Length: 567
Image 1 (cartoon, rainbow, N blue to C red):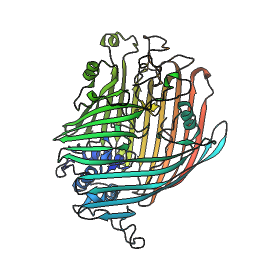
Image 2 (image 1 turned 30 degrees about the vertical axis):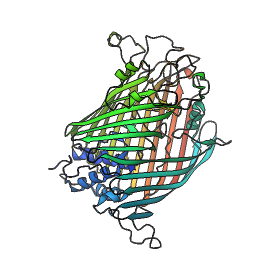
Image 3 (image 1 turned 90 degrees about the horizontal axis):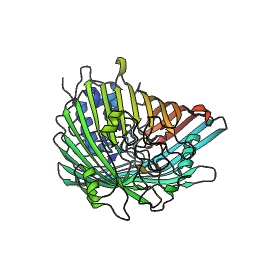
Image 4 (image 1 turned 60 degrees about the horizontal axis):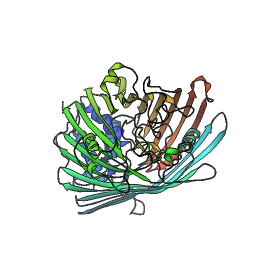
């Protein structure tokens, strides 16, 4: 029996657009990779977003692989769908998208997945409309309210020869968040996932969200470059402990190098500095920007074991990017010391394994600061700052086709990702935040969490998803800093440097239970129906328990569903 290692599809780094991070493609790629029993040497899923070309090559190879009992009918149908969505790479002539039986006016939707699809020898263009509406009925102890969400825009991707590729997503969005998201946004002076927005008097938000990138080949077959404004992620789990899409898109430049079983990514980002968070004078800053650089090295140690090493530094400079951090080689700690600058550095390891086909184990360990003497003394030293993740994915669970289960645990020590006040200037400069939000896990620090996800596809068009989140977190009371809020200085208002437990401060307990059903009416046109129940309580009834139950339905075209279950 052949494993999906993969043999034939060697990525040539011709340039293509990227697949959106929240697209269902990623879950499907993880599924077929784990069911195949081996990791690809050219498609490394730990760093996202992925090239459409690599995705198409991988799926084409998967179609050629015959497992003992073959792929399920649903898998085969989804392979055809995802290939069609990346039609410029699905065939050698660039015309691999599925043909429509009845094009509109003989011009539009000649391809099932594309409103406009133009392919010639040197130039490719795909354009699609973006439309969506979601209605939410929410019940809390204080109110019962109906909320509206709608969006409109366009998605365009182009390719010139095999030299340059580009993608642009442009959306106008009207959003009325559920109650606990609205409260969080107010408390942080932000809007989760968005940088620029206008808040209306009724608490709703209007914004234009453009994302996209230009991609070019630097050294054919080996090195590519990408410049754009988009979401980024590092990690294999539902959560990431170093970089996720929670805080919103960022301006970035990226170099990706692929040699043999290795992929090495250099990511340079411009972030939004913390600004005007209510009750936090250290964020009364109008400087606008800070910067970050990340390295990630991924390698397949064996066909069933992948290991990645990463590091990331966040720093603040006045109107310039620190040249020393453009060094494409690991490690930043030495550079930081040579510069004499106390920037914020984190490093870590991520790993995943496929012990048997259909079963994937993954994890991540992040180290922010570490003192061995104090760690082994087990005295709760506050400057031992680390996070850990362990997860399991079980595909075709209990021999049920297309039933996929995932369980994941995450812990992050208090004060991890916090930083010092900058030169007594009155503001925090180099903490791991963007847009007043954590760069990685939505809870920030000082928590333990358990996640359970079940996904079932009885048919290619119907998907049922259930998710449960349970977490405990220490929260600040009074003027004390117990280490959960990344926008505070770890040198101020600390109860003590020893005796710091994982849950430090007043214990908060959160529970979220959600169910979503999606049905694809036509290619990329989905109807959604679902509901969520959430509770959040502080010990000793410090504040009244928060409860929210809401139901929603909606329809969307070429658009990801707006989800309110991050915490």
